[in-house]
Image (cartoon, rainbow, N blue to C red; front, side, top):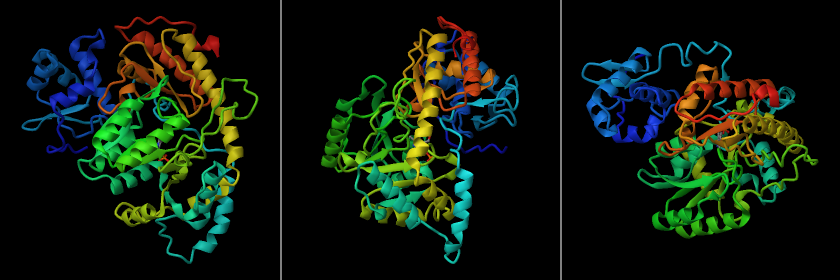
Length: 487
Ligand SMILES: Cc1ncc(COP(=O)(O)O)c(C=O)c1O
């Protein structure tokens, strides 16, 4: 790998924020510091190629001896996470091979950093049917920056079925929801503009907004209390930001859902300030419902209306979670003038969505209710297994049982998320530490645990967590029964 000598630099202050409570561990200071920097590199919060502060600077900022920082950098160098070049300081890198420590059995690593599911049944058959229809499109050039009419109409029909009048010309088909966020950010955000985001929130949305030049204005969301409405309103009124990016349904990672009356108030306040609310509804249809045993397919949970039913909002959707991430199909629902701006702006980044995938999705949207019911059953089972397993194994943790989405946002009771994630890697389990979901670190007391995986993987992951928890130090770690005894 080539090392850039003129890559970005991280200041001692910025690194200090990312390091957060790195001293929570009882390991020697240099080892704790090295470990925390390593995790920042592994989970992408410190980009490869970033220049670290000088030893002297970082030591002064953290209030530790220079020897401690020097030893930490040296440990990182030995492990291949840092290269030191004369004249250009210490630069962050990934070790040539092992992204996962050798102690984790190769090929047997569980990747729980992603909250996703395998494809629904019937995708291959839908693909065959779609291939049969492809002939009708082959005489066209195939560069489709707005979406095939058949898919735009199917998406519009889905909104209508969910209670929101929508026409096909309000839909732009994108390459997944992530592309939709980035495209909206590019069109709506100027350099230096503020963008309201939730914290914790979806980290790749932070990246997309920042890449468009936004300064993020965080508003807190908690499992129990949902959105900090006072701060949200104040931020809207004080800064009149051009955009507010929100996940009102089964918010990732907390699972919170915004009450209807709050939606109305937020959208009204945003409209008063000229703020475009971008509602990311990627999770909206992943209803899991009440605790196991609920008789109806959706566990009695009412299906939330789309955000734009409560006031002016641009909404983002995707089949990435409901059907399959591999289709890479998402969309934006907006008023026509914005649809036109988005389509015009799009060609700077991509020249359209593949036609075959669009035909596959149009086919599958015909029976989305059936698909979602099956998903809900699967997710309810997974959620109940994970929640029961965690509550039993870790009585000191707070383990919510969300009514939708794919994850539970667990309170660990101590600022040890990064430590735990590093320890879990050594047991072959990859997880996203709480600070991944913060705007500037924080959330060391939280861990996002997906419940979207098959039983055997879930059980192995829980066993790895138990082993990892036992292995971290500096924590009072009361534990209950082992997973094997409870699931
Ligand atoms: C809230 C949220 N938005 C967007 C995305 C990206 O979705 P897609 O795979 O459709 O790009 C995800 C994926 O995890 C997500 O959780």
